[in-house]
Length: 328
Image 1 (cartoon, rainbow, N blue to C red):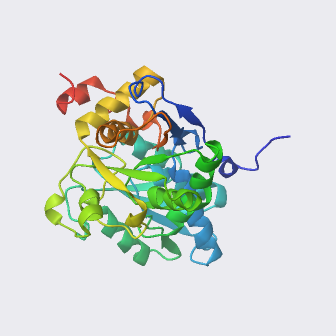
Image 2: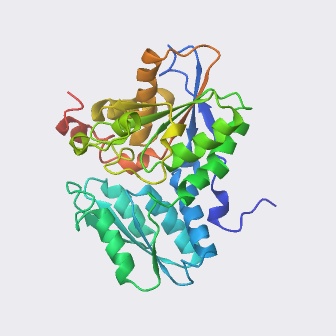
C-alpha cells in the first residue's frame, strides 16, 4: 500500500514541465519545476521541515515549544504544517504588503500572525525581523527559525532540490534560473548542480528596489538601491547569510509590472497557475536570452516557487492591476 504516515512525507519530488508557448521563440528547451505540488503549495515546505528537524536534533526546539519566524507566507505555511504534525505552536511576523490570503492561510493552520509595517528599515524595532527577534527572547521555550541566516535553509535544497533536478533532467541541465530572496534555494541548488557539472549557469532573478543584484556585482551594500516594491517572494533589503554569491553567474532585475503580466500570461497561455515570483523568473529568462542567447542544445530549468491561489486578490484581479497601473 502506498499510504504516507503524515503530510510531511509528501514534500518534494515535484514535476518538471516544458513551456510550449511563452518561450516558443527560444531555441532551447525551457521547462519549469512546479513547486506548488508540495503539500503547502510552495518550495518553502522543504526548508521549513529541514529547519525544524535540525532544531530538534540540536535541542533548540523542545516538545511543546513555540516556533517564531518572519515570513511573507510560504515559509510560514511550511512551518505551520510541520508544527501541526509535530505538536508545536507558531507565531509569525509579516509585512503589510503581503496578500491577505497568505495571512488567512497561516491562521487556518492555527498560527498567530503579527502584521508589521513594510516601509521601515530592517533594524527598526517595528520591522518584522526585529519583532520576531524580540518575541524569541521574551517567550520561553521558543525558537526564532530565521530563514535568512539559518543554513538549514540552503542545505535542504542541496539535499533535495538540486539532486531532483539533476535526476529529472538526466544530468542534461545547462541553465538554472530562480528568483532570489533568502538565498537558500539558489545557493543550495546551485552548489549541488555545479558539483555535478561546473559549466551549468545559475541565473538569479531580482526585483527593482532590492539590494541583491548590486551586491552580487560590486560586493558593496548601497542603501540607496533600496526602495519599496510590489513584487512578492523575491528581493531583499539585507544580505542573508544563506548566500554564496560565487555560485550565481548573473543576476537580472525584472520590473513589478512585467512580473505581474508574465504571471498572468503563464496561467492563460500555459495553464500553469503560479505565484508572482514565477512571473519574475520567466520574464527574467526572456530578458537574459536577449543578453546571452540560448541554443537548441541548452536545457533551462526555472523554479516556480508557489501557487497562484496566494495572489487572486492582487495580481489576478483586474481592478487591483489597474490601480497599480499594470493594466490599461
